[in-house]
Length: 69
Image (cartoon, rainbow, N blue to C red):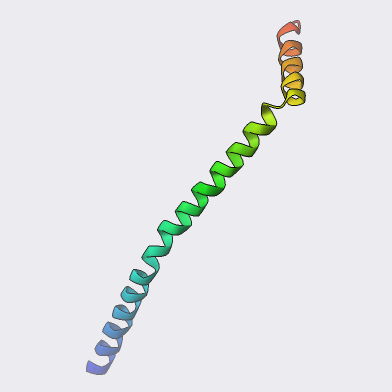
C-alpha cells in the first residue's frame, strides 16, 4: 500500500511540474493571437476604406433606405 501511495504522489508531482512548464506558453500564444487579430483588422480596414468598396456600401445603404414598406 505504501508503494501505491508513493507512486500516486510521484505522478501528481510530475503532473504539477509539467503544468508549470507550460504556463509560459499561454502568454506567448495570447500575444500571437493579438498580433494576428490586429493584422486582420488592418487588412479589413484597408479593404473597406477603398474607393470601390465604399461606393458599393453606399449604394447598398441608399437602396435600403429608399425601399418602400
